[in-house]
Length: 383
Image (cartoon, rainbow, N blue to C red):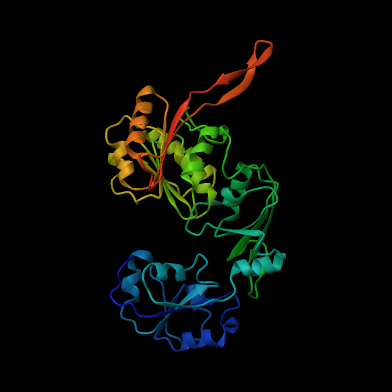
């Protein structure tokens, strides 16, 4: 959290496309009693001429604290709900004492126009974020509202994901005199999704671009079951390969985060492409070899160690975090390392063998995959 020279209380007023007439009496009083009102030029243009105003500086975040310091009573304007992809969230995160006076959000107005309930509608914001976030929400029959996207980017994404038959409605300047169906200055895109089903987890192996370094679906499912992701948690995917475990971890919930650590620049680039394709573009990729690449990373809640067990100090560095840990070994040497870890630290040690039916001459036989040794260590495990 950033320290500010003077944490004066701020009032953040949500203002809609209906402008000054649409503000409540309380919101108007906050504007009129302020020493200065700040916001975007479009928002400030809604106010009476006697109000002292100043537009936000650009770029905003590097200069925000200096800009707001020592100004007396400040009123901040935001679009609709200031806590929906808005400046209100930013100010709270930076340590300001904030009073929020919201207006109707564009999401609320869009649902009202469409007759979509909150319970059946997923909201995806790409304001300042990658359009790939929409991919995670795509599923047949889903109703999705997208904020901050361009029509071209959204159309290209839907086509690339096989959802170009989806019904897309653009709703612009909601709540204002210029409200219309069609792209405009303030547009919400409503998607009624029509395309191929893709599960959040248990993705088929061919959903990932890879060079063979991939935790296959059955082993991935076993690892994720023991990693036990919960909303808002952070995973380290060490020796990430194609990034499949970190990507599925992130797909479980929109608040989940993952850091993929991969020493090969080529594979790291592939992880980034997979993350964008599969709807989790915020997945962070660190290029480097463990354990050195782990230094300075945000402490995780869980770690998947898919390789590197025989590299000195890698397993110890992961254990030192105190996070839940799942490690896979396929060689005798890595299996021995896991056996020693099990003896010293307890936990759960299993071997996973998967066989797949395949043609064998004129008949069908079983084709075995490599057996994987899996060690799970959770806080509190006993040797």
